[in-house]
Image (tube, rainbow, N blue to C red; front, top):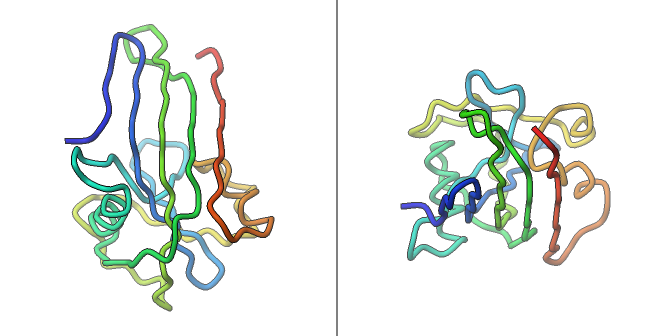
Length: 157
């Protein structure tokens, strides 16, 4: 069971993700009907470390057992979304982004999910609608340690 909760119109989620770079391209996924692409990852299960969750989620989505290179970003994100019932859901997510060790190939067998894979060249990240939105700037500047990024994208829906 994922660590998160819904309390009225407030939703919280604890997430772990892999940043996968091969040959100058970053891996994103998408689902049918979505207008954007997003990072590989998902909810941390109760009793699971964020590192273990990142490895599990990457494997479930790609079918590849990538190894973690290092923790890259702790991302705290706030946004509002349509709750599907005419109201607004106030969302808060805490996510740990791990840089995964490259394998030397972009071939992916696919995992349990039915995601579409998108290898986006790093220099083109700013021209695609992708989440998290910080990745474009992250790759433009030098980075070696762990970064804390807080994003407040709350708008009226």
